[in-house]
Image (cartoon, rainbow, N blue to C red; front, side, top):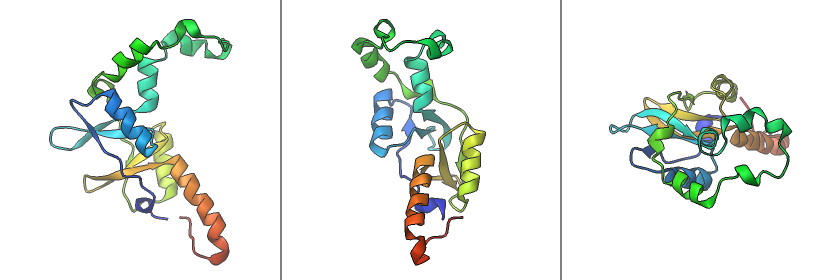
Amino acid sequence: MKLENVSIPVAVMRKGMTLMDFFEECTRCRVPGVPYVDDQEKIVGRISIRDVFKHIAIPEHVIKVAHVLGDRTENIELPNMKVRESLALPVEEFVLETIPNVSPQSGIVKALAIMEMFNSSYVFLIDDEKYLGVVTRMVIARRMMECVHTMEEDKCIVS
């Protein structure tokens, strides 16, 4: 299976965009992160939903005691005003410098290994500095299931 056949075309983020733009693109495409490009359209980083939530919604002291929190956490929930303020923040404040990526010719094992290496659930497909899309663990799992369902017909090779 070529990764280019399962990639999800996702827009990039750039200076001047907001977290609202970021969340809209991630939810529209059902991906947990997108690339961030500079003024020359070169990918210089990424923005991750996990990392954004960690910064805007989960205080460090809450992470340390998460296992003992009860279900009633109203006193530490995000108020509507905080949500509006957070979604208006510029995306460039949340850019991660690491860029998990593989070529479109790479196989599943390499993509999954790169995801593990970067503690990510996605990789970007990049060919000759051209961004082609995102491949997620979920997309790979879905494709594997499709292959199992069609194996009787010898139509699917998972590589």
